[in-house]
Amino acid sequence: MKDHAPSAERNRHDILPILQMVLPSKGRILEVASGTGQHAVHFAPHFRNAVWQPSERRPEALASIRAWRDETRIPNLMDPVELDVEEEPWPVKSADALVNINMWHISPWSTTEALLRGARRILSPGAPLFYYGAFFRSDRDTAPSNLDFDRSLRERDPVWGLRQLEDVLAFADRIGLGFERVLDMPNNNCSLILRQPES
Image (spheres, rainbow, N blue to C red):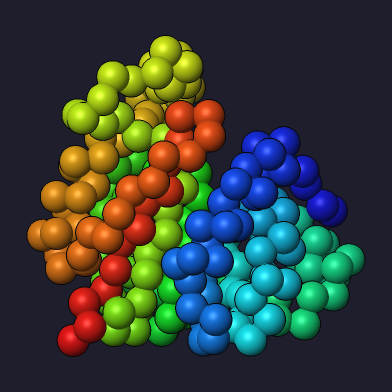
């Protein structure tokens, strides 16, 4: 059964141009935490010479991704794999890019660390890690809407909440993932690009 997330419908048009700048035109693109599958079916056709590999840990999400895939029949969109970033080894052993959208604030900090460690293990030399979401940032005031969002997340689960961008970058640097850039996006979100070292 196909699920539908209004946020995915809204932000996919903003995210796609950044992906087209950052992701390789060939190879395997691993999308971690693909959610409903809406992003996968929107993005994959724009990377026709690459393989788009969706993944999820929840059975209901895997079913939704399959339903979107079956309906659209996009040739380079693979069947989703079950992937929990905190369980090793990952079912995908190598990738030429990793995409992750709106996961870090609805999971414990340990999940962010696990995803970054996993990216460090499987990404090919020079490959990008793209993350989209909201952050706290020391270089600017936090928008009131993001403060409200963070408060509502922590009321639902105390281990959830917006991450401090500098904490993410410090951990990435510690494990050897390089920071490339952060781009401001609509609705007080950011696109963060990290990169695997060339060697």
